[in-house]
Length: 160
Image 1 (tube, one colour):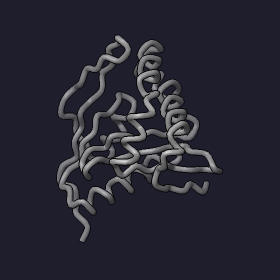
Image 2 (image 1 turned 180 degrees about the vertical axis):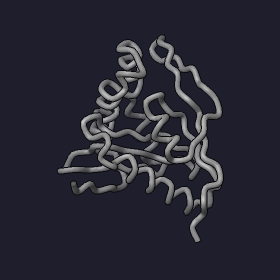
Image 3 (image 1 turned 90 degrees about the vertical axis):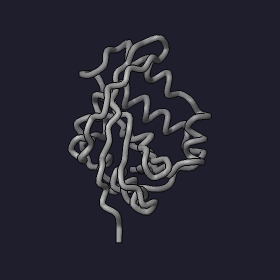
Image 4 (image 1 turned 60 degrees about the vertical axis):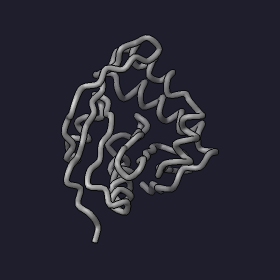
């Protein structure tokens, strides 16, 4: 599998939304109800927010056979804002590759920690990466309550 990780560009935004919605609707079925997944997927259809993130953050996409299959971003070298992989491409190492690139950027920024607001679905992935739950968040999207977690990884090893 030849996945290419590259910087996101403005013209990627529609495909990024598609991947995000596909992941939410199809990968989170055990942790979130159909109503919660629908509300969440509608809320992420926000081109302006994504375009601003692509412009202001270190934002990467994973491409396989000319198709975006995952993406992730880090803001100010500390906050992982996005990390999604299309449901049909899970457990292929794509999230790991994106995550490692985000960590490298964090190290370039001399950050000593990382944090993220993480779904119930993504929590085990982040725990394997050394993150711990700081607190449970309750968000309301489209009038629907959705729980996620603020997680932090301290003691990030800096590059020499």
